[in-house]
Length: 177
Image 1 (spheres, rainbow, N blue to C red):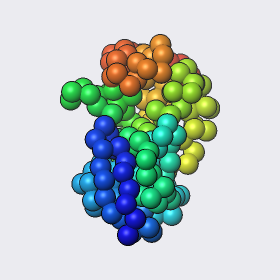
Image 2 (spheres, rainbow, N blue to C red):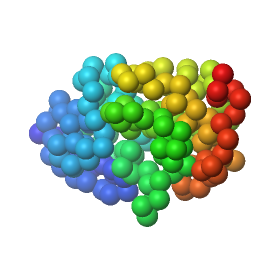
Image 3 (cartoon, one colour):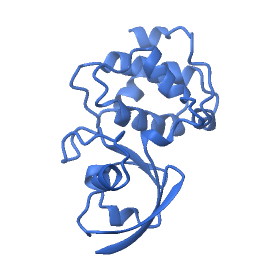
């Protein structure tokens, strides 16, 4: 067993874990954070994407011991005081989810894109999300949702605070193409 200390969604946890325990299983089975689904266990689908120390990672390809001393943000850690971020609202309002299984990973990957590029093009959104699979073929609405959130964001920090004007905005022409 290996002792780890990790901050997840603002709470610090200390645990003894098997060195081979995947971060995805640690989050779900030990911490009860089931908002991060395990879709493939091979890092192909991206459903289990989380933020680890400021970078998105597929938690099925990271060992829990690799997160030792780190900071993890899951989909469950995004909302503040029950308020969704502009990106989460945009996914809801623009129908960027169907069955919802891929949604946590899509939102986490899109969040990373918007931190780096607050106003991406449709092609840039598609490229940023290419490591995440949607089996319901909701890609067009996912792209529209990310672009709608970007239209409401003036800085990367606004998405974190759940601010922005994604509600009620018109989808840009680029998003409908």
